[in-house]
Amino acid sequence: MQGITSAGFASLTFDGTVGTPVIPRASSKVYTFIDEEQKTVEELRIWAASNLSVSGPEAKLSDVKPMMFFNLTCQLVGKAKVDRSSFLLKVWDGTKCPYPTWKVPVEAKELEGDKEVLHHLRNLTVDVLVYDNHVQLAKSLKTGSFLRIYSIHTKQASAKNEDLSSHIEFHLHGGTCYGRGIGILPENNPDVEKLKTFLECVELTDSQNVESMSSLELGDTSDNDTDLESPLQRCQQLSATVLTDHQDMSNTILKTVLNSRAPQQYRIRAKLRSFQPEKLYQSVKLHCSKCNTLQEVPNGDAFDFILQGCAATAPNSELQSMSWYESVIWTTQEEKQRKIAIHFVKHYEMLQRPENTLLMIEGGTLKEIWKLTRRFKCVIPVKSTEDDLELLDLSAPFLLQGNIKYYGCKQCSTPKTIKNLSSLAEKREPSWEPTEIAQVLGIEPLQYVFVMTFTLVDGTGALNAYLFDYEKFFQIPASEILTNSFLQQKMEMTMNTLSPPGRKLDDLPWLECFIRSYNVADGMKHQVYYQIFDTTVAEDVV
View 1 (cartoon, rainbow, N blue to C red):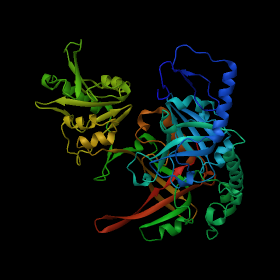
View 2 (view 1 turned 120 degrees about the vertical axis):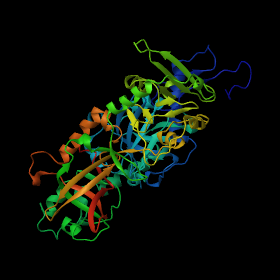
View 3 (view 1 turned 180 degrees about the vertical axis):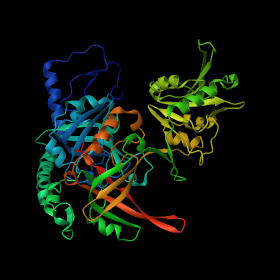
View 4 (view 1 turned 180 degrees about the horizontal axis):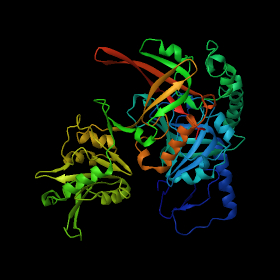
């Protein structure tokens, strides 16, 4: 519209990305656009890709920090469909990101790209999640092509585990604000020629190449003559796990770890002899970061029982359709004629689209609530009092989002009335993040975690190490594992790879891990415990 300078002025505009369909956007209903003009547009696109730059800072992966927006010149080595509105691009620029990066979970069969290249560069590539209007172009990209991705957003992973405090994600959000998009660079682009020269040098000296690794990088085990395998054999076996930090630490044999005082940190190379619990779903617990307690995840029957008790009380008609929410009431056709109230939270006195809507329900059954979560972004079960709506007993979830139930700590929470949600509704763009909702409602949220015990051996000793992990080790969110059969299968396959049932100890894969030792006082005794940290399963394990 800014280009329309006078009455009668008309224009055609085109997407400037090389390779996308040449479809004019017209300011007039009547126009002509011939084949010769289409060729001109295509030529201009190629010229622009080499000669014009969209405003925004250029950065290498080695320069990135959380909460940055930057342009990245890179090579595409892999791609995969994630869901209807997002697509994964695996890219590299020859430099290493200084932070551990989030790996988008996708099925191996969905990932396009040379498997050897993906494995070789697994610690140098980053996963960029592309959304909305950029998905169609992302699907058409050829692996090996050179790209300039404009206005990538880096953000810190949404997890409270201190092991994930430096973990970042890469996103290309929808829309075209600030030049956001993907440009395909031609081979003769000067930046491409420079990048190709640099990447060729990186490939020659890449630390992923086992043959070129020094003994320090692999961990010098020459003093361990009772180990399961010789140092040469160990060098020839890639680890089934990857270290995400402290790469300068050298390996320590388990005998030394067991004979050393706590607290300390170690880099070890060992095999997983056994693990507990064997039924993997039992490893998922709820953890309170404030009081440090662990508890079992409640089953659906407990939630259903609480809902049935609340359904016996009819909704308070005086608490319907307030200034910040709109209420709908109906009576069921069943014998008891149960009344259900749904309160849709508004934004600037307007209802939002279902995928952005937070609603509250009272009098609903578990089945009815699950139906609502499939359509609306957030669902909060509530009950009426004389003065306001309030949360149910904290044995029930305070929020449901998709298939995930969010619980609060009974010991650390001081629940507030629902009217406190109105402060979030007044925000410019309410995101309805579970942590924000919990905060305004006085809830100390419980975090889903994996809690397991690994018995690790290396020929010099054996120790039990705890795995306390939100999503880093398995690259699977603990919050989703109980409701996602694909993720359950992926986790089971991972554990069968790390510790294959029925296999001899010598045939098990090596795991490279960081562990920390710490003291726990039990009466007059002090017990030493060990915990795995800054370690993740290698991408090619499953």
